[in-house]
Length: 185
Image (tube, rainbow, N blue to C red; front, side):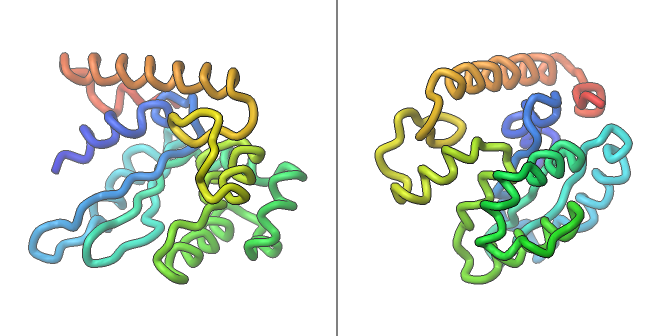
C-alpha cells in the first residue's frame, strides 16, 4: 500500500489546510507489521509543515490514523461551546492536544465503537455532531463529508471546496507532484 496515494485520496483538504483533520481507516499490514515506523517517518518529515499523524486505534484488522493540524484542532476544541460539549465525554481535564487525543484514543478503545464526538476533532460543526447523536445518524438534511443537521448551504459549499481540492490534488499527484510539495505549511 502506498500511503502517499491514500493521503492524497482521503486527506487532500487537510493537506491543503482547508480542513483541520482527517481520519483514515487503514487495512492490516502483511506479516503482522504495524504502521508505527511509517507514521514516525511521516511525522519527522511533515511536522515542520504543521501536519501531524497519530494512530488512534489499532486492532488485528485495521488501524485508525488521525492526520491533523494541532494548532487548528486545539483552537477549535477550546472554543467555549465545543469544550462544554466535550466535557460530557470525559475531556474536562484535558489541557493540551496530546491530552485530548489520548482521551479520544481511549474512547475508541473503550468498546471498539466510533465515539460520535470524534466529529468535533475532524472540524465538523457542533450542531451537526449534536444532531447526529440526537437522531442516531438518521434524518440528516444533507449527507456528504459528514451528515448535516444544521446549515445545509454552508456545508454544501464546504463539501464543494473539499471535492475541488481533492480533484486538484489527485490531478497534480498523477503528473508527478510529490506529497511533500502538496502539503501547505
